Length: 261
Image 1 (cartoon, rainbow, N blue to C red):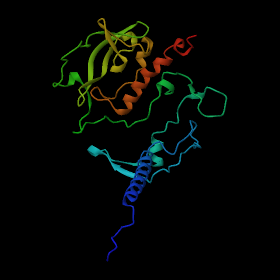
Image 2 (image 1 turned 180 degrees about the vertical axis):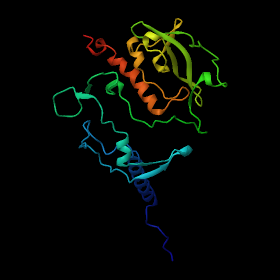
Image 3 (image 1 turned 45 degrees about the vertical axis):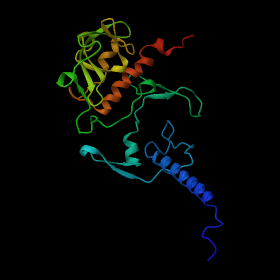
Image 4 (image 1 turned 135 degrees about the horizontal axis):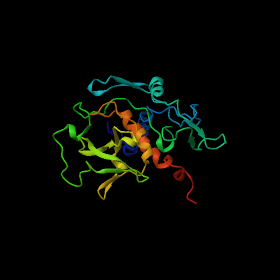
């Protein structure tokens, strides 16, 4: 009974090896959980990409969505198919066969959904806050928000990238939980399409008594994607509206596409 338990065993070495094993398993777990959407990798033409990586796609897991919005299982072929766009009007910009070359839009570049105007088919439902209410709402339809600092853009003229005055700002759409302005609502003049259109606040510059939107020209405002509701905006509508203005940064005119030199 004179021998002590673990008397000749290096407990410090055991501890460090257990740590490394735990750390390796943690990396494996986190990496596979990160592959629940968008995997297995595909080429632009929809074929399976050769560089899948060393980690396998995890087993399907079903998540219950909040506020009664059903369930979603990832990964699953049905979920991936729902978020895959097969109607992209584009062509390879190079005649080579290797991947990595950009694709150019065909037809109307502003609505092709390619390049700077690309968008993802998100769910066609509004984003909700923790209480189940729509996050983004018009300020004019609420009584709890007001402009406490800075210039109120409502009533100011809207000037497009080519200098055309296309309408006036009628309202601001706010992210209620974050207390941020997400969109400005434009009341278009009749010659530019009439009706109301939204523009992301990040594409606007309020200065000198006007709201300047450089990304698109006056002729483009009539084709800005609409919202189904005058009081809500869905995730899919947000994608399409932002993509339209983003596409204009490159595709609004041939001058923006041509090289600077």
